[in-house]
Image 1 (spheres, rainbow, N blue to C red):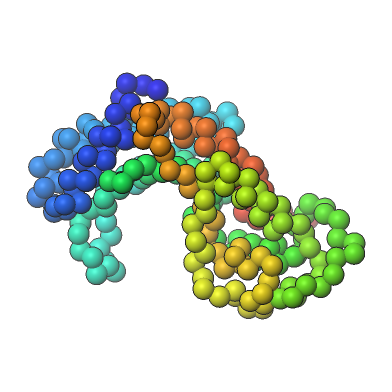
Image 2 (cartoon, rainbow, N blue to C red; image 1 turned 30 degrees about the vertical axis):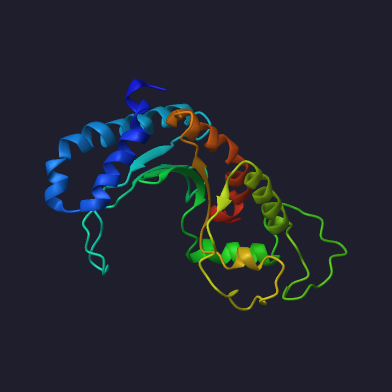
Length: 244
């Protein structure tokens, strides 16, 4: 860990706590030099150090710091700034997947997964969770129709993913709640993997323990390696099929 990233979490939490109490353009502009020195510059260093470590595992990996300004066009909340600092490392080998790091006044979190399942990817996700096979071969002989399951074929994907999520939960990674209240048609509400079908994203998060003071670089790199099986499992859904 470089000296510049060592104080990122405590300094960012202190700054964001003060920002949350005021959250005006005047206050932020008066603290702009502090923001650059204590948040943005260390975050850029963290972005680079993590990318340098992970790039051999994820060629072409790119990092991003999200801007502090909020988009107010469609929001009733007109406070001008986010009260969090978010970083993203995009994984080109796993389109749509990323590793995330966030700090807010309450603490820091690390996560990974896919932020948005949409379009053809969302359709492929639902079909595969519901039982449509991927290009990988799974044994399907003898599988019986189950309640809410429109197709007796089963790719094995949903069972494998559910088991992997249980394993990752033991390592502290918990999924965000599904976005939908009901299972989308034509899948039944009693489908055995209703929780997965109600999703329009899949991200898992772990809180960063503040004691002892964490090494942000090591924490993010370690999380990325722990979450690697998730990225691999999602790969056939995220990648568009290659035409024969």
